[in-house]
Length: 335
Image 1 (cartoon, rainbow, N blue to C red):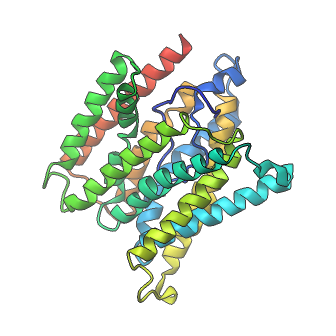
Image 2 (cartoon, rainbow, N blue to C red):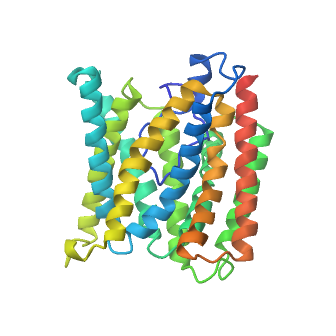
Image 3 (cartoon, rainbow, N blue to C red):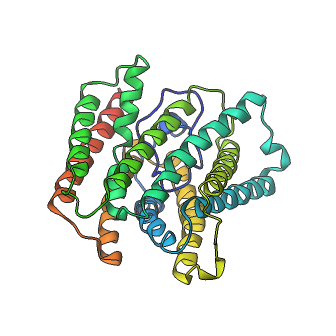
């Protein structure tokens, strides 16, 4: 994950904190033989962690908001995760690792953090108070399509395969959002997730076009702290603190919040960052269409969320579109 290359529509799961906003377009050059070397067990273990943990974050969020306020819980999670990451970096590399070269870099990291974590993740958390976790994951899966659209607006030409993937993704999105087809879900919640997906795509797209800290881990610290603070302010502005009774938070919600913080924010990200340096990008990118499937299955098995024909059909079309975009991008990058 390096700063500067053209944006990549392959973006991390928005329900996991954006621990780095720089896209993995340059990782193959870091390990030129990665695509040809035999893959060891560690690669498959790390990939499995990214598949399952990031896919399960939608389920975790749904459990958190059963008894916790959405933006306040998200804000607490990101601020703590950012501070833990900062402490780890200082422990490993010294206080200088948190230094930025220009004030503009700090401002850019904060802006990206607000787009990704308040607009992208925060709205997902809010929406999951009324939207099933599996449906939210499928709606968010359209993020790569939004990035392709943003790239086109910026004057780039991602390729015919990417545009075909966008059309598939938007067709699946239409099926998922048609009133009444996805069950009793409120349309407002569905639209909130769609806005979240667009804002996540905008933050991802912007991150390689504005001055960012050269160390992506350092950038991640400032993004998470700024985004977490933004979520806390948003929660207070919404009045989520009025009548707040911490004692009423269930053990189930506390456990889910801890899971999101430790596994979704730190463990899975570490595995993802390591994979970018150790495995072919085309393989790492498969999480983009595996995560939604994991989320749908877990939502049905653990929470008993219904699987309507519209969710199955629309979700399948969305995943197919994302798969086409990912394959097209990976092929063009190799060429």
